Length: 267
Ligand code: NAP
Image (cartoon, rainbow, N blue to C red):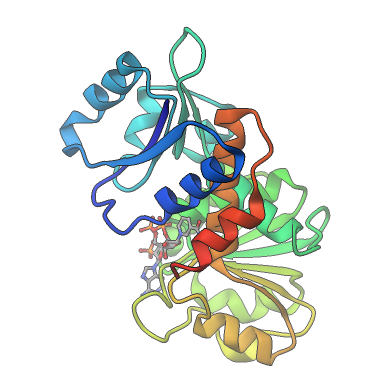
């Protein structure tokens, strides 16, 4: 029996257990996916304990994504993003840390036939998701403009991301006029029917991904659809970060449709 899981605090409402267990059932794998809520100070002990117990893989969420970077051997992309959300315990050395949020966003866009190479992308938000998505888009060959409520955070992030520029939210109308791809990586739209992007700035030449997945249809995605833009909801990003983790851990192609159904039936 292989044991996988999620480390975070809180993790009670996570959709990862049903998504991963649906994949194990589909492929006949003897595996389980559990959730763990260590205290913040105990994260090092938790990971060393998991390693000692033979746990096969862990996802990591708030508030541990940054602290874990110091405990595992991070891949290059996770190091640049400054956060780990997937740990693989295979092998005899220290566990490897990955950031599959970046890949999740890229796969969500690509699976919807949205080109990235040479395109102009705007990322709204410079928190954890914004960092991952900005590095991912730049690695995929897009030119990235980052706009954030706290402008200094956008500028600091832009200084680390190749070819990127940093702005306040007031620059969004101008930035979007020539943009091909827009990603909302703020939490705006989650708790209220609100959007960080002025409706008038949206246009039919845009592809819009909202990282917010609850609700699935955010105000931003409604406005974008009204403007004739292509829309991709946040469940696609959540799905593909999980798909990527599954494939890292098992070395097998994930049963994407089954995982998608398990996820969407709970949203
Ligand atoms: P975070 O690190 O706390 O960052 C929050 C971001 O939202 C910051 O850029 C913050 O700007 C901005 N923000 C918050 N309230 C705002 C407001 N009222 N107006 C304008 N900007 C505001 O959070 P995170 O981990 O990046 O997560 C952001 C969102 O992405 C959440 O909704 C999360 O659920 C979602 N997410 C989705 C996936 C997925 O797989 N679909 C993965 C990761 C995250 P300041 O810097 O100015 O505070």
